[in-house]
Image 1 (tube, rainbow, N blue to C red):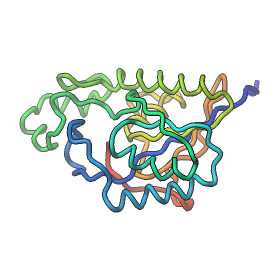
Image 2 (cartoon, helix red, strand yellow):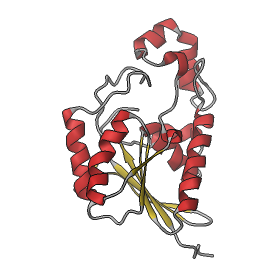
Image 3 (cartoon, rainbow, N blue to C red):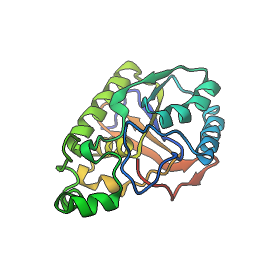
Length: 215
């Protein structure tokens, strides 16, 4: 039977290019902003957003997501609704370390991270399972608050990957298979019984996005 309940649409936007090395674990204390290229991506997203009917905008409180959201929200005339549950995965004692430092200084943990991405967590950090739980909780709250509406969700690659896995019933162990470029948009329509991925990895102007690192 078809799901005849009104669909709630979530437009997932990954932040623009951050001013941070791609081969280093993000540290929340650093809280980088956007590069000039990232700022350009934010303005391109604002031009795209003008053509969308959006009821509310939920934003991770990090600097890079707020800077990405600001031009879109100006175009839409909406305030940001900040929610820490949309933040990137927390990596505990690994935050701020280069990948080479982790590989050489914590070799067994590095292997565990690569072989068991769902169950492993650095000391003081999150597993993918625990991250997914908070992401699913905030998205459920958003859908409950806006039945039949459309909302922006400006967040991070890990946030969006886990959201897509949950929506499409893809095992969390497969989360890395979703490519989420900086400045790209994914649309998911949520019905009562199922969710449908309408598009993924779209950059303003209709081009597909095939580049961009993590976080």
